[in-house]
Image (cartoon, rainbow, N blue to C red; front, side, top):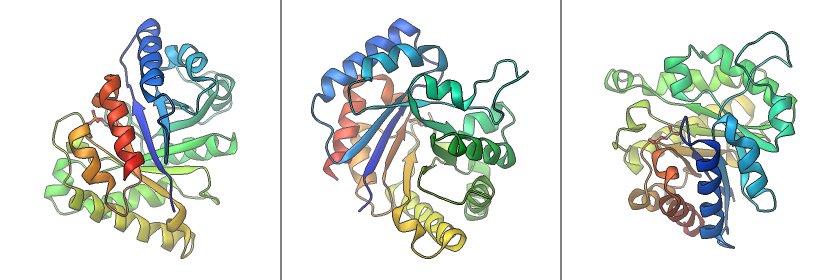
Length: 252
Ligand code: PGA
């Protein structure tokens, strides 16, 4: 059985001190409550060290929001996999739709980052998802399949890979995909994975759902057989909500 995984993506929110406070509260509220579910939190780069210290002795993973695809060099403003590793990050989010939408990320650069992260021993959460226009145009399946195929091109081992299906129209909008809509795309992603990696590959791969997950809808989403947890934006900025979502994943 696949263990659920819930990750809080704090995006560009919280100063170092504020992030430290939120991490401490999450830790306190989770207590020994992490059962049946892997948990991660993803502060912005400046707060990684501080949050890393706070969660060091816990089971919570420190997750970065992006990484570059070169080892080092003249890439002003970028952060390498080795730097993230030295801060204690065990996962990195790659290809979030905000990176694709605002920062020119493409399936090709996502693929370079994914391969670099895996080669550096970092696990990845690779995000895919269609825009509203694409959903309404009936091309969701084609777009998501392409993102999965190109993002994972030349990746030989799925061991360190988690996927996150995040319909762009559901991110930060309060509009959640219905559990049925999400389940349908998750099932189709699994078919693509089996096609790429061999018949039983998808059985082991975790696929999170992301897009306006909150305590009130987490349970029904996580109850779907192909949904293995969530990537949580807005609701992860409130410790109680995030912890409630983690518990919903643990219970499902
Ligand atoms: P949201 O963001 O929960 O605020 O919709 C999810 C994400 O972007 O990962």
